[in-house]
Length: 149
Image 1 (cartoon, one colour):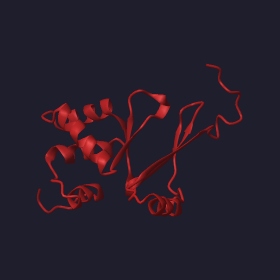
Image 2 (cartoon, helix red, strand yellow):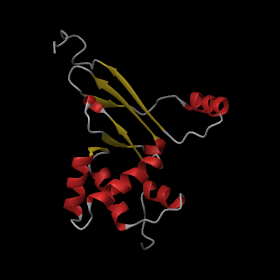
Image 3 (cartoon, one colour):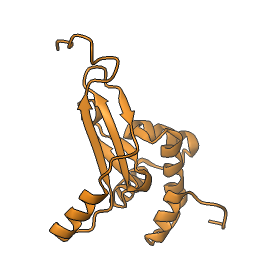
């Protein structure tokens, strides 16, 4: 890859000692274009649209690597069997998920810096990221009767 400007995620790959292969760059681009929330099926479709020569195995290998590096995390929004992969800006990501309408509300400030430090010290680990999800009723659903299943 030439010395053009690369995204912070691509730089994290490079800093971790991984090559910026065409497949990895394409998968990252597809995730970023998809707004950072995609199922594997949606991601495969996006990658196919960008470059049909990239196979399923390459996409899943990239997802595995990105998960290990905390670039993405699988989450199970809507209690789906298929995970939704979310991009992890700066190693963390936060949601409030409405249990009535499944609306996903993202928020930035989780204030977990002190907890992260405490856990690292107490448990002797090095944390690389987190995914924080709260469940409840959104502003539209909170005053409506609860739906019966």
